[in-house]
Length: 186
Image 1 (cartoon, helix red, strand yellow):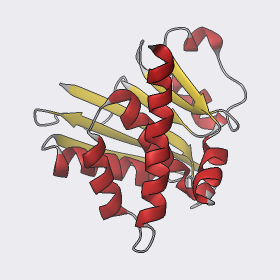
Image 2 (tube, one colour; image 1 turned 120 degrees about the vertical axis):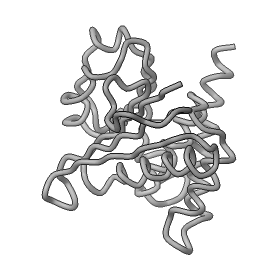
Image 3 (cartoon, helix red, strand yellow; image 1 turned 180 degrees about the vertical axis):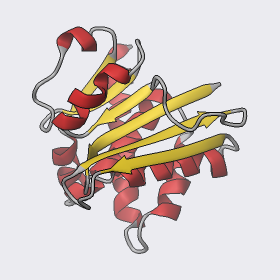
Image 4 (tube, one colour; image 1 turned 45 degrees about the vertical axis):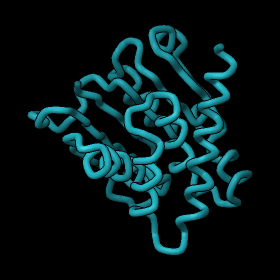
């Protein structure tokens, strides 16, 4: 089993932290092999940001995502640049307010879930910067790439001290959103 996850957006959206947390959940709490890589522009905020996590039950021979199984797009630039790399049938999560120009032809071959992620984070925790954690909840809820318990432990271990509860609140809201998709499908 090899699962590839792509997170992309712009600096300041927590792209890299989300990927680190997912990698930690897989490696530390699930016992998988996991490799996280990242690239970003020279600006700390506002520049392009991309992070990848490869999770496997065997040692990872190549650390980059070749054809992601799952992708998260937090910005138009990220979507436009990387949506074509995602494999057919992949689960894709899109920040619908920040990705207004989409490609229906490409999306025809994907399973796309769009949410106003930033707005949902603000409504849930009062902080837009918890959007990345809320998205992790949706991703794990939809894909089961790691267990909910493992991602909760990894969030608790990875976020700044004193922010654990607000981040767990965002994560659980993501689980609820994923569950509502599953409920409406049944």
